[in-house]
Image 1: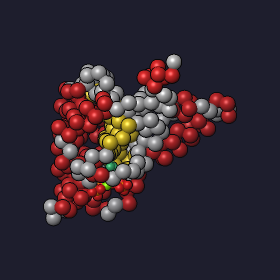
Image 2: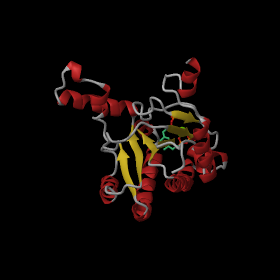
Image 3: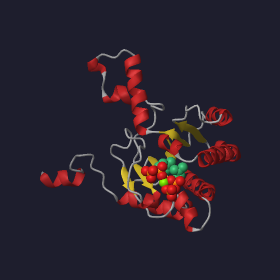
Image 4: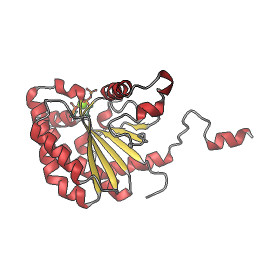
Length: 240
Ligand code: IPE
Ligand code: IPE
Ligand code: MG
C-alpha cells in the first residue's frame, strides 16, 4: 500500500439521474451505466491496497422515489451481485451490506445479500460495504436501542459503548468521502463514522466517475493535512 492513502474510503454515488436526463434518456439508464463506475472504483481500491471501501447505494429516503425506479434499483443490485460475486470472492474481497432490513427489499435479494456476505466472510484483502437502505440517523437510533436493551447505566454510556453497537462495529471511521455530481451535502450518510472524514465533491456525475478520477482523489487525499482539532505535528513543533 502507498503511504498516506486513506484506510477507509466512502463514495456517495450521486448524479445517475442527471447523467441520463442530459442525454435524453430515462433515469434508470443512468443507474445502469453507473455499474461501470462501481467496478472501476472497486478494482482501483483493490489495486491500491485500500482496506475498507463503502459505497452508498440506496438511502432510507430513497424509498420515496417512484415505485418503478425503486424496483429497477432492486433488480439492478441483485443482478450485479450475482454477476460479480465470483470475482469479488476470487479477489479476496469481503462483502457486506449496511442497513437493509426493510420488508420492501425483495426476499430473493435479501437472500443473495446474505449469501454473498457468508461466502466472502473469511476474505481479508479488502472489505466492501454496500450501504443499502442505509440512514445515518436510523443507524444511531438502532445502536442506542441496544444500549437500552443491554441495560447500561448512565455512566456506562460512552462513545465506545455506542460505537460497539453499530451493525458492523469493526468498521473504522471513514477517512475520505467522495460525493460526485457537485452536490455538497451529507444526505444522512454514516453520520457517526464521518465525524472527522475528509470530503471531496468532484462535479463529475457518478456514471462518468472512472478510475483515473478516483486515483486523482486518492492523490489529493495524500496531500491533505488532517488535524483532528489539534494543532498538527508541525504547528506544535513551531510553538516549542
Ligand atoms: C444516485 O443518483 C443513485 C441513487 C441515489 C440511488 P441519483 O438517482 O440520485 O441521480 P440524481 O442526483 O437525480 O442525478
Ligand atoms: C444520496 O443521494 C443517496 C445515494 C447516493 C444512495 P440522493 O440523490 O438520494 O440525495 P439528495 O436527495 O440529493 O440529498
Ligand atoms: Mg441524487
